[in-house]
Length: 84
Image (cartoon, rainbow, N blue to C red; front, side):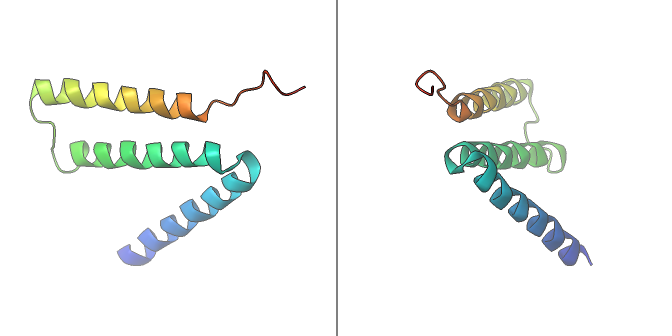
């Protein structure tokens, strides 16, 4: 049952990604999708597996996640100046 549930969530995510490709394009979808995967993996490591046990690790980890979010945001920005 757990494997079927995991597969169902994977299918939902995959369909959502394909819909996003059509609506906003691959160059915008991929940074967002990849960024969410990296953020999710890091948070699962912290909350489920107990990584980042020291204060230094937590500060570095949160800083890294914030930089990752900034990078995803900057990568997904589209230039509208030339479009008229």
